[in-house]
Image: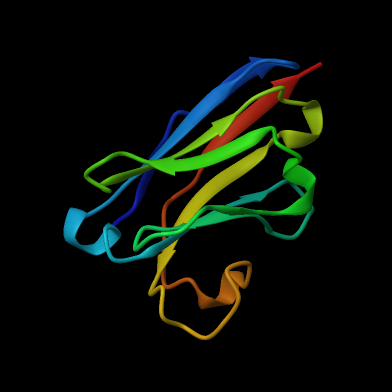
Length: 125
């Protein structure tokens, strides 16, 4: 299984970016998809997750309505829409996939089996 992120880049504070995560369609449509980020010198941080089998996305508290996770109708691509970006959002952003049936919490990064290569997001002040 390969996941590929795209859409990262340099943006000014207050701006927006949309990250995409694409993978094999038959896998993603039955998966739970998570978005994570890791800033230099910091631990990996969960952003949120979306169960492609159904249900609403879930978000970490720090998101506070700025980020939205959704998928296309075919459930082949998962997006992370980021608005009102701040310099502290600068990080490498990763998508990850896992079975939706694991008994572990959506924010447990150790439960995700497949990871993309990451895409850099840099927010300038």
